[in-house]
Image (tube, rainbow, N blue to C red; front, side):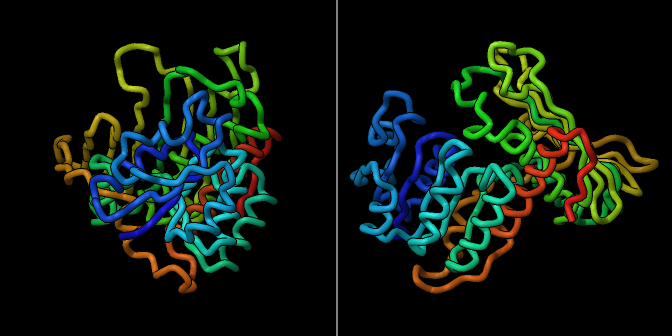
Length: 338
């Protein structure tokens, strides 16, 4: 039985705990939730529906919780401006981390956190599980098989409903910006589709165009990329999806290669391939797969120093690329990432 703690109670922690519940061999033994992120609900009540959290100790002091319980892993799920602080506490305690993203909201803070993580010998898995979803997994498998040749042009869309945005979304020191918060998903789509082709240069625009009551929260973003391989890409991000009975988001990826193209509607659970001389056809989809549990089960025992794995390196690289894209939008310039 692996023992974990939940640090924070805002973000995508329910997705992680759902996986842990289904696996059955994980236990959340401690919870340190921040009321300013939870609203009025005490942390214990927030996670009361998860079997893996039954009987967990609740504390307002995450450092003391980590020191007293010495868990195998921590689930860090807090507003972006607090993530680096909590991941640092977990690293100092020798605790592996499943973390919200981006890992920090400034480049200096990200660099300092990476040094701390490497020095501590722990690993970090980002909450970027879309590559385990059937439509994206099918598209990536077809690309890896060589079906469309080398990826040359990549396009992604991330669109969300505005919904309810806490006031701190307008505070850069708390939110970090829409490009790091949402755009990192598009970067992860590209990373999965290209087998890790890093961004070499990025330019971007961002603005609040439709929600004047919260001008500090960008609701419209457009990014363009050149990858190390020479491939090019573009992504749009927005909070403009109509408030209607449709799902909250509608993620999309298109990859054009030297011999064809693949499109994946990740939320609609559909992927298509078009090859020269052939009719358009749907790709068969694999069953939904776990994302966090396999990573957790592969971790070395607590106290055994670990070198950064692929997930850890990806977490820091994608966080850095997302922050550079935001900075490119702030400055109106093309930013080299190398």
